[in-house]
Each structure stands twice: as structure tokens, then as C-alpha cells.
Amino acid sequence: MKLGYLFVPPRGSRTRGPLSQDTGRALVAQSLGFAEFYAAPAQAAGATGDLSGAETLPLLQILPTPVSAPIPKLALVDCARSGELVRPTGPLTAPQARDDVVLGQSLAGHLPFSVSWVGADMLSRHWSTHVTACTYAARKACPADWRVARTVLIDKDAGLAEAMVKAPDSPCRAYYAALLGPKADDATIEALIDTCVLFGDPNTVTRKLDHLRQLSADFGTLVMIDHGWADAARARTSMALLAEAAHKHFGTPTQPAVRLASA
Figure (cartoon, rainbow, N blue to C red):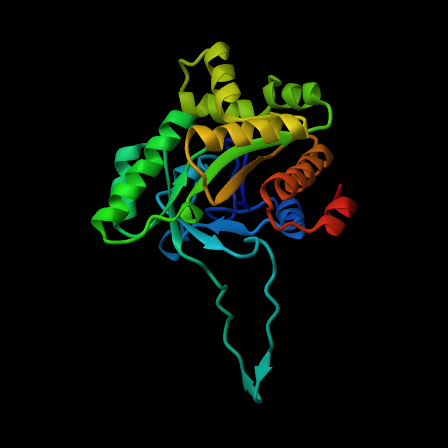
């Protein structure tokens, strides 16, 4: 299982592009061995506005490096001025909450990406729908192609992780409250957080992730949704603990030496 990283800016913020990253933490994620980052495709590059619903973009381009990472370039090549370098990109993936839309996107050849607010039952429907679409298109459905997004917050003290996720000013709470709409009460918001957010100590989060994979199906990439947490140091530590847990339990290729230095 690989790890992906997607930053969700606070609601109401104005970003410089469709998926501007938190530069510091995106680079930390790269140093920890996170394998995928995401950007809006070229045709959506001019999109503006409140992008706290980044998972609702119709398509995401898979990148091997953070969006904010600078690309070194040569001014001259063979005594001639070089043009702009094109960032290497991967295939398109389609974030979806509804299984009926997964069918059309998979038929079009886009890789499945299950958004962070769907439960295990819907995840299993996403996978079965993708398999059906691949069968219609005479392609093989590979679990490695499936991306499942989840907000993740890990702390060695499980109570602190839960308190940070559920605090009244938590960006995670604000994100899910916005998804549910203005009529959602606190109980409904917390129920969604309990169902869809991976929080707790490393062992607890590992068990939750393992249980999620058993209830739905194996997936190739866990996309960590990162919020604008007020405690940036704790957020970085959480990422390091996730990388360590994924490496130990699922064989995810991470970088232990850098991980310990970053924590």
C-alpha cells in the first residue's frame, strides 16, 4: 500500500491555484516516502475560489512530487536557451462519492479515487462498480489503481488525537460540517468523523485501517487528507507516525532515517 498526500485549505481561504499545497508539510510528506501528490489537470489550471472542497474536483492529476516542489532547470542546453520544463505527471484519477458516477469515470479510463467522507459500505460499492466498468471496457481491474482518501491524525496519546480532531475549532470538523450542510448538528458531524476519520494512537489507527480494508477491499493507495491544523508540529509528527505504521504493517516503502529526523 502506498501513501498519497492531499492538502485541504481552510474554508474561505484563497489559494494561488486549484491545489496549492502547504509547502512545508508537503515536502515533509515527500521526505517520509509518500509516493503521490495531486494537482488539477491543465484544463482546470485557471480555477479559482474556495478550494476547501478539493476532493470534489472532477479530476486530479497524479504527481510524483509535491505541487510546491521547485523544479531545477538549465538556462542553456547545447548553447541554446532552454524552454520551460514540463513537470512529469501521471494518469488522471476521479474523486467520487457516488458509485453510479464511478462507473462512467472508470469506463473513461480514469483511476478510481474514493473521497474521505464515504463509509466502508460505499467503498465496497465503489470497488465493485469499478470492476464492472473494467469488465465492460475489457480491462483488468487492479486494486493497486484504487485510491481511498482519509483524514488521518495520529498521536502516541490517543485521547489527544481525538481531542484535536473533534475540537470546536478543528479544521477537520469544519470540513465535514461544510460537507453535511448548515442543518447538520454536532452529533451528526461527530458520527461522520467517527466513521470516516482515522484518529488515535498508531496501533488504533492501524487496526482501523486494517478493518477498513477488510470491510471494503484492498486498495493501492491511502491518500492522507491534511488540514490546516493549528498545531503544525503535531501534524508533522502524525505524518511520521503514519509513515512508520504503514511501513511496519503494510510494507509501505517509506524512509525511516528521514522519518525519525522529521518527528
